[in-house]
Image (cartoon, rainbow, N blue to C red; front, side, top):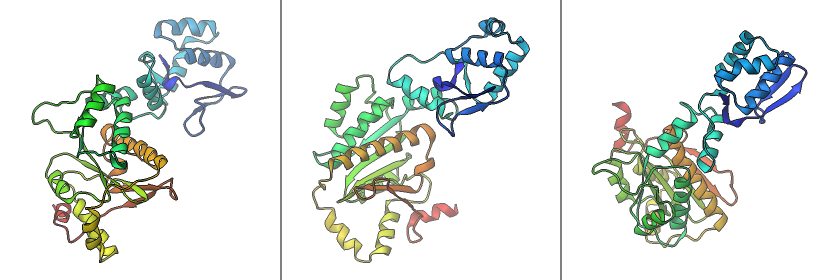
Amino acid sequence: MRLRGASPVLWRGHGECQIGAEAGNAVVLKGMSAAEQRLIDRLDEGIDRVSLSRSARLADLPLRRAHELVGRLREAGMLREEPLPDGGREADDILYWERLRSPGGASARAQRLGEARLAVLGRLDDGAPGAIAREAITFLAEAGVGTVLAEDPSLDAAVAQSFPTTARRAPLRALPDLMLTVEPHLIDPVRARSLARADAPHLPVVVREVSVRVGPLMEPGRALCAACLDLHERDADPRWPAVATQERGLPAPRIERLLAHQASGLVARAVLEVLADGPGTWAARSLEISGPEPLGLERRWLPHPECACAALESE
């Protein structure tokens, strides 16, 4: 057995230590004897069940008390039975999510990502939307997303070249676990209507003149669709439909490179959260980042009462 996330053991004072370096995430143990502290030191290096009795003897600690201490740590979620993962990026991710006590375990989370199918829809040009999508997909492949279904041939070729172990095809009629679009100015209403009929969630990303909006996640069988967003925009600005019609014919905006990199990371984070942990944070919620608002402006969306999808809320 070993401490979760390879967390360090730090001494706080006589008979007191903490497992983990960051306040708020560490577990503090108090009232320990010197012998118990010596045993905790051995757990920092890893210990199996067979050697627990020997370690307790070397620490001059009764075996019964050693088992009690181990049980206390196990109840606190601080122990893992499986060995440390092999080195590399995947191991770093697993250890990180162990420290955060990922639901079901960090290894199970990694398995969910490995089994996930992500569809990236739309043709990507050389503008900001294409750059953001390509970098985000790089992050996602590195994070272990098992299958990337790219509609754009250049993106598909890039995945094949850089990440040969990432699947790029899926069984016939197999639905993706998430559909991602990265578009300039506005959500394409024609594509959005088509995606709304698919039995898979859709995460829209819109690259605008000075900001990038990620979300809200649109889920099958749930009210809130792209038409709702359009109607809310119209409520805020009655002339918005006329402006939006013209924006659809504009070239993709040219944005600050740093903002594009930041947006790529945010897109990747949003996709990973949805694939590994479910809708959660992104259900009916968007985040808009820009130069003046690098921490992002959060917005919660409600189904628009004039939209036909609102009827789903009453079913």
